Length: 549
Image 1 (cartoon, helix red, strand yellow):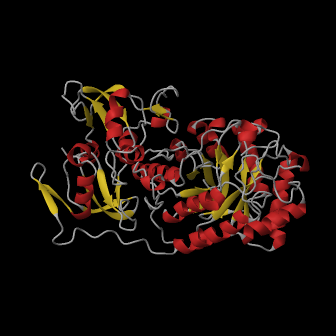
Image 2 (cartoon, one colour):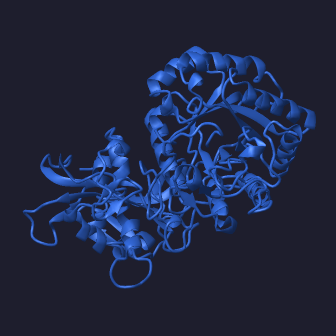
């Protein structure tokens, strides 16, 4: 988001790599689906709670700051049709009608606090016009402490929230989530770390009577907020990747704390802020990008959907009617929000059955387990023993992110059956490289970065594959195209992107020190004492995570 009078550098929101797509990679799996040839976007599915579709709101960020002089192609890639002043009643009435007709349940009004009169009056007027319209759409507030310096302190925000609570939360049009009035936050690092936010929460909402949504990819803030969302997911190379990371990190957080924080999916039509800050652009693909981000929210049974945005024209994320796109994105929003609500009530797909009697099996006396059927076929086609290791448990129903999935643990990974996906995506790999780091309490996003000019550099994670490991990484991959050798995308699908630089680390399995590099789904270890092709070995992540010796 970009305030009219305030330029600022935004923190990354959900940059997360996977497969050639971005996913923030911290746990469970990277869905190669979203990044490879046939890109199936339905992998990790958030458990569907027993709730009505109406309990799963569609929310859009709304910016009331425009003046007639703002509408210019010198600072925007597209402009509204018609143009307007953000304080004009007719414009706001039109927006309320458009949003409600498109299936949007709530508009989140960007607000600079009670001391900035222009935007304060407009957000307050939005509540009044919603109530006068007789429509069921709601409004919430997003204090913009990152954009408005006079608001950027614990004291100022405490006072501002008192005003919101007194003047706005009591209104019938104020948006509530899970029974509590919602407050949205963006770029929390601009105020401080989780400790600072804890101070604010204790002062402004000591009874936890509000529901706080935090816009950040730093999950440590989830100790203060009630939910996290990614504001911008367009840094990913393919739709769905950031939400794959989000799902993994959320699952890890919930499991480690016995929590049930909700899954908040972000959908976006595209992005283009090149004219205002030289940032980045994501092509809209005539609506296909937007469709794909919605499909991810549907496939993952999201508890809520956030649209970035209704009308952020300077960042080119708008769905409001415009000169370039007409009302295409409102029509798509109606279609896709209806589909999202319909899917919310649908039963989840049945888990894959156990291996059928008579299925081809292979026994491994080394560990006393066997591998059968589709998992065996996948194991053999995609690397076998060097890549996955021996089976260390039977194929069984495992609870993964709240869903019963037929899966089997191996020394170096976990293979999961997803029969709802077409081949080869009916078998998915666990994201054990990221999972292992998370279990150690190591945040890969804080690791020292590589020089962007380094060979084999991945801008999505800021790391480069070390020369010692490039040969192994590039010569192994999942089999997708039937062609000999491993393509870049096939290697990416097997190992994922690097999450660290190569450094000497103590191996948790044997206590020895090796040059080590962490990837999404693997840990590479360099053993110069071994003959080729055994100088590079993959860490026994499956054993380490399960505790199987």
